[in-house]
Amino acid sequence: MERQFPYKLYLVISEEACYGRDMLWVAEQAVKGGVDLVQIREKNKNYSDFLESSLRLKEMLDSYSVPLIVNDNPVVAVNCNAHGIHVGNSDIPPSEIKKKWPGCNMIGYSVEYMEQLSGTEIEFSDYLGVSPVFSTPTKTDTVTEWGLKGVEQIRTLTDKPLVAIGGINQFNAKQVIQAGADCLAVVSAICAADNPAKAAETLRNLIETA
Ligand SMILES: Cc1ncc(COP(=O)(O)OP(=O)(O)O)c(N)n1
Ligand SMILES: Cc1nc(C(=O)O)sc1CCOP(=O)(O)O
Ligand SMILES: [Mg+2]
Image 1 (cartoon, rainbow, N blue to C red):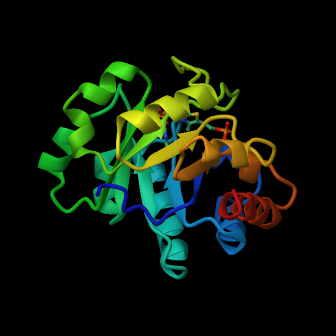
Image 2 (cartoon, rainbow, N blue to C red):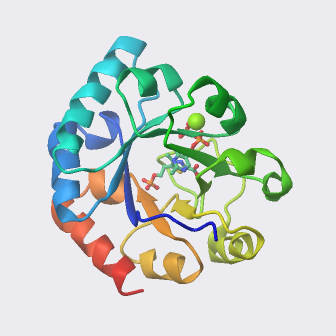
């Protein structure tokens, strides 16, 4: 049985997404509200700034026993002793990550095409990002808007844990879980909220009662 995935609410965070608020503060509030997995996703930082932010975030998250996932960059991930990495179709594939980073605890892999589900990379992945469930201004270089029907369909085709991402908020969270997602990943629903702790708590309650 594949679906050993204890995480339910996944914060994907960057400095940019916090609109001038301290990223560590936003992340800590989110964890207090119920986030149980965090990904640092810095698309515009150089290596040393990305690493420095990751180290600071990791230190804070360690005090709550919340794992840190690094987006895209295995060197940053290894050097901040992250729990794992998330990669997509333009990144180093999961099979290569497994070879180069044997100590990696978790590899997330974005699914943008149905064909990926019958490919070999899936076997090397610990969860699949359903990418995106709904189109979102936060990330516009996406392919298929899966929608709820897409989540349902993917659910029938794999036993891998499914992390839904893209346009998820308090108004659709329950439906996305009911469609078959194991975990919801959000950027703006928490990072742009006036009260990130409250936003996380609301989402977490919706997930738990879906
Ligand atoms: C949980 C989760 N799912 C999907 C993605 C997207 O990854 P990717 O397709 O590699 O795109 P970028 O995030 O690198 O722009 C993700 N980051 N996290
Ligand atoms: C990081 C990311 N990946 C996506 C994908 O579809 O793979 S969508 C996305 C951003 C999600 O932001 P928001 O919660 O603000 O919609
Ligand atoms: Mg990527």
